[in-house]
Image (cartoon, rainbow, N blue to C red; front, side, top):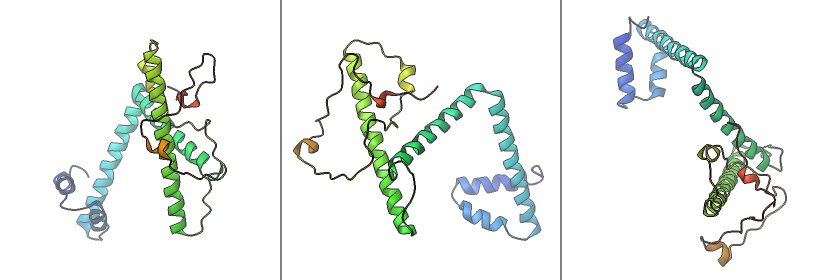
Length: 194
């Protein structure tokens, strides 16, 4: 089937790569009832099956590939976990009835989640810089496993009023790092599992 339609499949791929057509136009055309296009659609399905089979074989035979996929899945789950923590005080529910309200709520959730990630990233980097300045050896493998998705150090319930004063407008002003020996370690510095 693939061999029979090989030239058409190459032309189809070329049209997509050169942006002469869009994927939605292609799908619409392949739904056509003409015999040739229906046969081409089946050939394209077979190409998809071949690609999926090749991916599964790589997944089964390549341990580093599996670890990379698992790492990505864990990162995605960590982000979803942070979003659930932020969204309505640990419940993770959308309370708006209509689509516009839900879109506003999801937009606010994304903004707050991104602000937390930025805050955690800045302070994690400051902590790493402090450790290096103090002469501690930092393992790059440990740094690679750090995550900015922690929220244990944040109070996520209640009402907040943010008033920008001069100290907040100064982009070089930071909170003090807790550098006391034996002091509480920042949850920002927790690591993902390897």
